[in-house]
Length: 80
Image 1 (cartoon, one colour):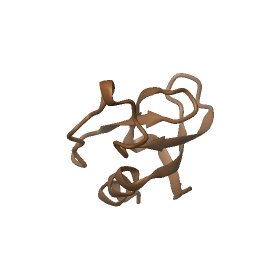
Image 2 (image 1 turned 90 degrees about the vertical axis):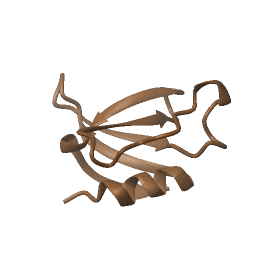
Image 3 (image 1 turned 180 degrees about the vertical axis):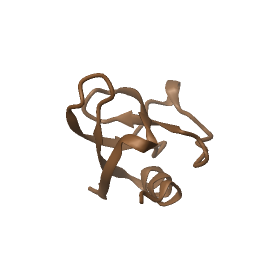
Image 4 (image 1 turned 120 degrees about the vertical axis):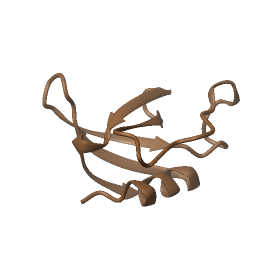
């Protein structure tokens, strides 16, 4: 089981590689992600992320955009 609280805390500290299954295609994607304010453009920061939500918003480092990931699709994550 994925610990969403632990994932969010590590996202706030730095970069985390999140592996998840895309809903539309079923493709497995590995995405370098962060919630660290120093790594996200200042014009688009999200201040509050709830671990109780079915989805989490993360800054995709490779797409340079916000991405919404459904928690139930996360396979694993690791600290970069």
